Image (cartoon, rainbow, N blue to C red; front, side, top):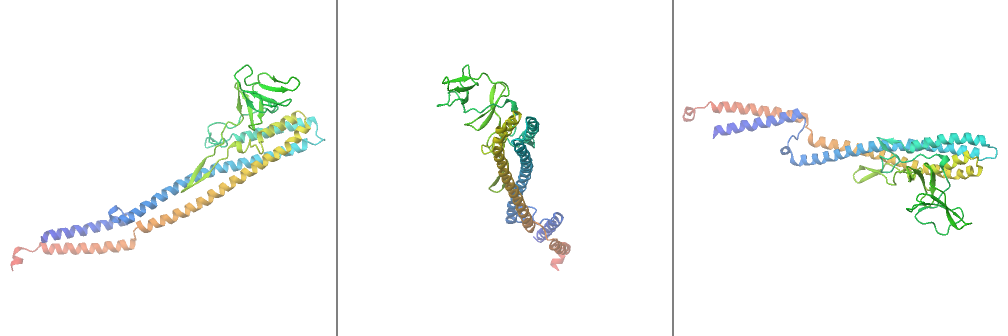
Length: 363
């Protein structure tokens, strides 16, 4: 029994010394669940929160890139619309001539091409202004020379109570399918305008959408959708990171694409009244862009504030984990020295006890 107690004491002392040495080597007070079950449970909960914060900050980083792209793009669009407005003001005056308007039409064509390029730009191989249809180019190109007068609707039946000159696109499956029909009050009938040519473009009034005849069928100029994308930026909080192109470039409150096409055509045709008519439309379009910029700016501020808060939270959580998990080195070394003293005393005691013989007990 005495030898068993000596051996047990040595094993226990050696195990404690090994544990203390392991703590000093790792710098951690908790190296296994048995060291501190409650503390480990708290540490694991904190680590889960830290991991979530890291993912949120990664989401914010991605969102910041997307939103920053929109911000710079819309600022460029705003500047381009200002240039278009200046051209419209200059060429709507009575002093403008057919030559100045033709030259202005060329300049406007470049402006429109640049805005189209912005509307179709990508970020991280995804189209920025296509809504959630990020793999499809949002806007089709239209030649202003192919722009025709508006049509009232696209329908399989003619509009009721038409006025002279009203137009619609026939969607019925017959000889005039996809043709534009125009109402003549003189004959009280709808007159077939013939099969549309490739690239023909019209605005459909009841949809407030421009359509282009391409590949043998009518397609909306805007090929995206009206949906938005969001990313989670903190627990229970998401941020919208995109604005669909239909809310900016073909918004019913200010249609950039339709206004610029109409202005370009009016300039080409030396149509002073047509040029003047687009001044208000371009101004409205600029307001739409300004409102979108305000929305984007608000999102940028929110992302920045949230990221700052997450960084602060992560710092505090890391400190809390350290307080629970990390070793107090000074205390650890003191404990190890004490345990070494105990171990040495145990060894000395063991040598004394194991040196005793039966004679020593009998004497």
